[in-house]
Length: 217
Image 1: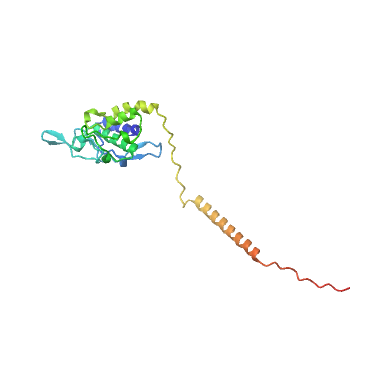
Image 2: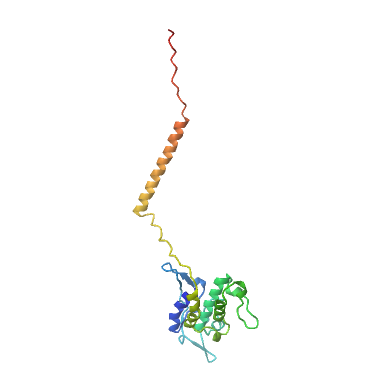
């Protein structure tokens, strides 16, 4: 999942574009190859455009979803690594089954506390910790850095083969399906008729022939 999302983000980040709303509801699995892709780029922002000035600092209107937004994004200063934070929180939710806003934070460092809820390899845990650092300077700064970090794990892991879903059933209005349904109905009628005939024959009284008196010799 991390590999799929970061690959999509890689192209955007290389153009200095921030997604700003990465979360589970904006992820879909593609039927053609089973890969996870991002949808809903309505909150994207290009760095350096549409900026407002507040007390001499460049600032944007905060856009995103609670729990997946980093500290700097909530304060109106999104960066490329703000997307990395959202990716990390999404991955942690996928592992733990706990929504981001329900996870506790260390009161001293404000870092997300999640490791005790699931067993993962130390390398993956370290990567996820770095994606969700409270201080943006301590995170992976772009999708390129994130992909480089997880590349050894992806290369060494044995991933299950994702089988494409079967093709949809033909429409009930297709001639082939209509012929099949008619045939099944006819077979059903014949079967029911056969059952009734057999039952009728079985319930009829046995008619024995009337005995003919013998002629006395």
